[in-house]
Image (tube, rainbow, N blue to C red; front, side, top):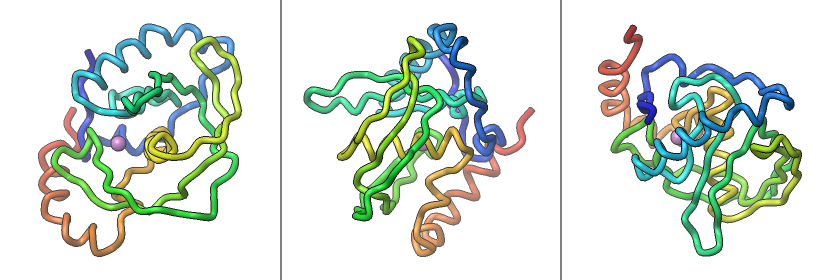
Length: 170
Ligand code: CO
């Protein structure tokens, strides 16, 4: 199992590299280990940066009725709905921190699956929400960047504390 990187760890700010398509099937072991790490920590999504890997790899399982675990490689959001909603998000890299985040309710997503097959899908609901959060991660963006100024202000002390205890460790 991987160790989850916590806010303050510089790897969380690194934009992930795209995986060359012919190399995607070789990610099988990494993806399996990412799923294990996500389930062990009771997350519903996990991005490679959160386990110290700077490539565009996401695992996701919203555990909804009819949902299935998915590995998403090299994701690209190609369209957003105009309509947005607010939803309380958490993040495994920010223990005990939650805040309402506004995001589009639906996206059009292009990605590769673990077999290296390309897909383009329209996605909405919780899956669209979690995917936007995880795609931010693989681009080095964190949910605090999308919080309202008021939320960030209210969480400032907690965030500074996290950063101080996890930042720049060798
Ligand atoms: Co997160």
